[in-house]
Figure 1 (cartoon, one colour):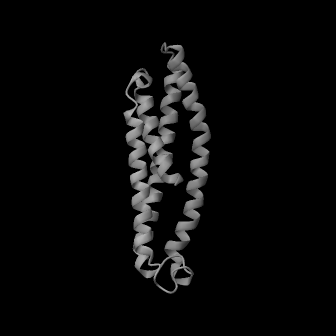
Figure 2 (tube, one colour):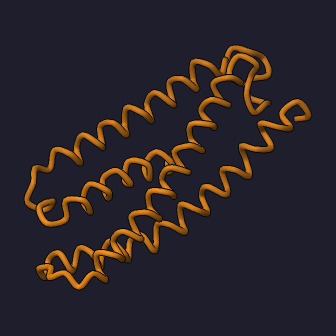
Figure 3 (cartoon, helix red, strand yellow):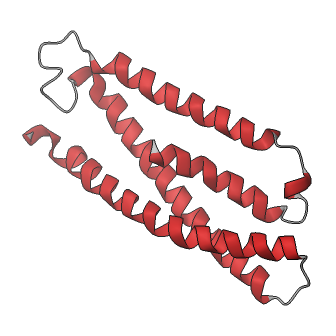
Length: 151
């Protein structure tokens, strides 16, 4: 979902910013590879959840997870929180890096200046969205980790 999408978008934006002078002229295969990796990761998450959940068990549809799926669910939650943390950290570093590029006074072409400005705008939008999503996920996962025995 959102965590995996933003995680792979952060890689694409880092590459685009690091290679800002030549990125638009290079092969488009990098984006396709990231999309493929994203689909694979999401597929593994879904298949793992479906296998570990245990729909044949009587209480499977009435609980958060079954005993068989609890380890997978906690592992997935931990991995997802790591991905969100990476994404937010990456976005903050990237925003600071791009702002520094903009403020250096170096002579960029019109296309590069537009790319830098557009990246700053997008990061200003995406950083709060991802931070809110991360807070929401922490609000769900942490009670599950610590209070699952009471649910």
